[in-house]
Structure formats: structure tokens, C-alpha cells
Image (tube, rainbow, N blue to C red; front, side, top):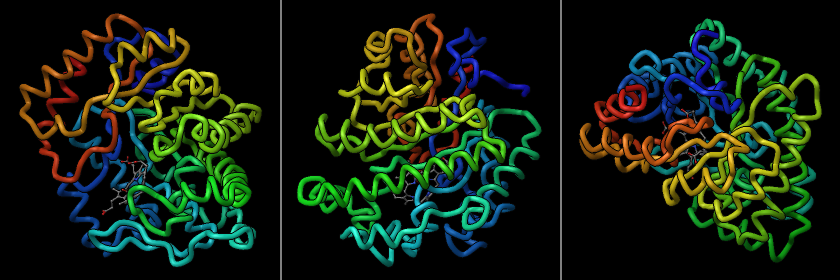
Length: 344
Ligand code: 1CP
């Protein structure tokens, strides 16, 4: 591997300059992404065609001096492969044909064979690794069981996921059965990504912050912990560092540290310095610029990055990123300024 900054930071080693990448770095703010998507017709075709997923993964690396690539895919390809019938409506977000309401619905879900139903992901990882040729590490990922369950229960992305939250109180046995099935399916899926060649894993728990602290630990963190324990106890997968990102749930950061991951994603509502003091050098932290700052000017972006690096100080274990995914209409010159400022 030529550029090992990300792996060094996750190992809590001293790095020449901090590694930087952006959540959703391949996506709609790039005209070359929009062109390829228009040609393919829809988003899911991009995910399910290894050559296209490879091209899109590499698009931001052609423009910017990024320290990592992230597999172009989606957290919802797993429930799609479990049998729920996924489509992405233009301008509307994801939609499932069938939703999870009862134990019977959970029983009907398949545990997909990664070599079969999700073979397009394995193929994409292999192709991307070949094209990267050791330039930077490749990040694989999955959604957290709770976050994926939110979409499976709701059937779409209606933002407050009230049906999933109601289920936690009205029918916790159904929610737990669903989460347990997702733990098994996600473990297998991530193992498949590791065997295909990813260097780092990230668990996206975008909706962990919708839960009370007690319910976050009981439903979201507990199910992620089972996946982490499964991967860390298997000699074929235990060497791969894992980053856990529970957006809006950092009141639980002490429990997250105990989960056995190497990195934690930090959103922009807290200070990196405070979070660094809380975790006492036990894990690497990744974050945490407000994605909205990329709508300002290159000068403001630079000074925001400088503030972040000053606030952090000389300590190891920092990956610079946004606190959530990059927004659709972000000006590209500000992305350039962000990455250059981190490396300067
Ligand atoms: O072109 C389009 O309209 C599709 C937009 C798009 C893109 C570019 C979607 C649909 N997914 C993606 C890619 C994607 N999604 C990546 C690729 C790698 C990268 O460059 O980062 C990753 C890691 C994801 C993960 C993902 N998908 C999450 C977790 C991270 C996050 O941003 O919170 C979630 C919640 C999804 C669900 C999803 N996928 C797409 C949409 C529109 C949504 C719904 C989001 C919502 O409910 O608001």
C-alpha cells in the first residue's frame, strides 16, 4: 500500500499529515457521477454493475488527493437481497415493495449468500482493488442493523421513522428478531467484502440518534456489538479495522469505545477536542466538519479546517472528514480547498 495514512491513524500511529476522505465522496455533487447515472437510468443499476460501481468509486480520486476510497454501493442493497424489493424513485429516495410488520415477515427474509445474491459487490471490490493498485485503502461498509431496520419497517425514508420507534415499545420481540437476522446477514456480508479485499470497514448507524440512550444501547449498539464480536473472533476477518458512526448518539460515546472498534465517526454537533478527551486515546476519531461549511468560500473552509486541527493538537488518531455525507449541490472548489487545507 502506497498511502497508509488512514491505516496508521486507525492504529493510533503518528502520521505526516492527517488522512482525509469524505462521506459520500462519490455522488451527486460530481458532474461525472450525474452523467453516468443518467446513462445507467437509475441508481440501483450503478450499484449492481461492478464496472460502473468501480468507475464511480474512482471518480473523486481522479480529482482530489484523498487518503481513502469507499466502495460505491448503498446500505439498502442488503435488505434488497433479503427479499424486500427496493427501488429509488427520482427525487424521493428509497422505497421497499414489502415492509416488516410481524414475526412472519421476519421469518420470510432470506439470509443472502454473498457469493450469490450480493456477488456484484464482491466483483466490484475485486475490480476496485485492482484499479487502485495499492494507491489508497478501500473502505467497505454496511448499515447498522437498527438503521437498516428503520427502512425495512418504514418502507421508505420518512425522516422520523415513527413505525420503527413504535415497534421498539409495542413489539420489541419483532424488532429483536429482525435485528438478530440482520446481525447474521451483515456479518456474512462484511466477511464477504473482507475476503474480496476491503482494507477497512465502516458501520453506518445514521439513525442511532433517534433512540433514547437506553434504547440506543439495547437495540442499536448491542446489535452492532454482535457483528463486531463476530468479525473480531474470526481469524479471517479480525485484522480489519472497523469505524462505527452513530449520528446524533454521542452521549453514548463511552459505551461505543467499549465495543471493540478502532475508530468512531463524530458528527458536527460536538467538539472533536471534547470527544478526544472523553475517549482518552483509546480509539481513533473521524470527523467532523459541518457539510454546510462547504457552501461557504475556500477561505472560510480553510480557516475552519485550521481551527479543527488546532483544536485537536498534536495527538495521533485523527481522520478528517465531514460530520455526515456531502450535500448534493456542494461547490467542487470548496471540496478541493478542504482536502488541500488538511494536507497543508
Ligand atoms: O444518485 C442518486 O440519487 C443516489 C444518491 C445516493 C448515493 C450517491 C444514494 C441513495 N446512495 C448513495 C451512495 C452511498 N450511500 C454510499 C457510497 C459511498 C460514498 O461515496 O460514501 C454510502 C456509504 C451510502 C450509505 C447510506 N445510504 C446511508 C448511510 C450514510 C448516510 O449518509 O447517512 C444511508 C442512510 C443510505 C440510504 C440512502 N441511499 C440513498 C438515499 C437517497 C438514501 C436515503 C437517505 C435518507 O433516508 O435520507
